[in-house]
Image (cartoon, rainbow, N blue to C red; front, side):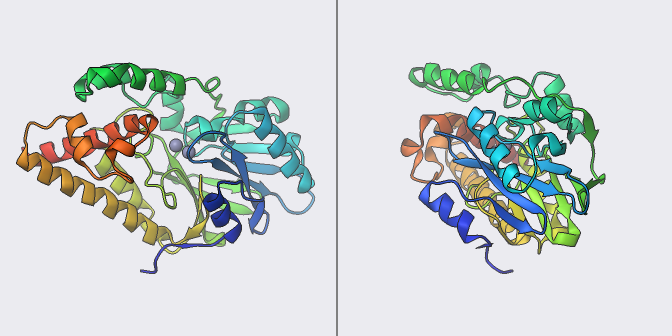
Length: 335
Ligand SMILES: [Zn+2]
Ligand SMILES: [Zn+2]
């Protein structure tokens, strides 16, 4: 299979330089709008605006960035440049419940009457109050993960602060796997891809040769798994199955939630899977040598980009959750 290759210099260079990419028409009528995430990593999230052709002024949005006044203004001016307004937005389809994707949805809904839709499993998680939790109580997990006492207060403070990004999103329409959505002149197929979150979805537009992948498949970053909604018994296995569900679109160009667009979906999916499998294999070796290793100690021995000690404390909760997954998988396989 071909190696992963960026398909936009504009987006690729922006990511490299830490700037925001310019708005870009990626297919006729499909525009990628980068919305800022100040002080965060990744630096921006894409919202995709699909314009109906002909007489219609309707705009269909996929994902809605982080809820800030700056992003509201950026989205308004991006649409103005396309001869449209916020009030023209007819639908907002959300790939998943994270606040960097749902942010402006409530405001858009109020301003335009847009129908906001999400996968049914994700909508259920929002209703249950799980939009801002990672599917587990971090306070409880810190003990189970064997986090040394001196780090617990700081990690808990970060987890709590991160849970404070606006109010829960209001959903008008719940969609499920196989649904066909009419987005302007394009028809998009809903593919349920649980893993990153419970009700994550991707949208495949076969006629355009693209798949909107949200945070399920990203360039550069290996998406975190089990970061929202109900936690599966084997989150990694669930995620792999979701990668396989996209196999019919292996040659497609990916329009991701962050970073830059690229080809191909199949090549990048294989890379991500290999990354996780290597880490599981590493966990197998470490646990064979020291069967009693807890999550914290195991995490400190696994390879992380730049090393565990250099991993910012904000990234450690996610790293610990990922380590927990690999450890559980190894222990389950050993039984
Ligand atoms: Zn996400
Ligand atoms: Zn995201």
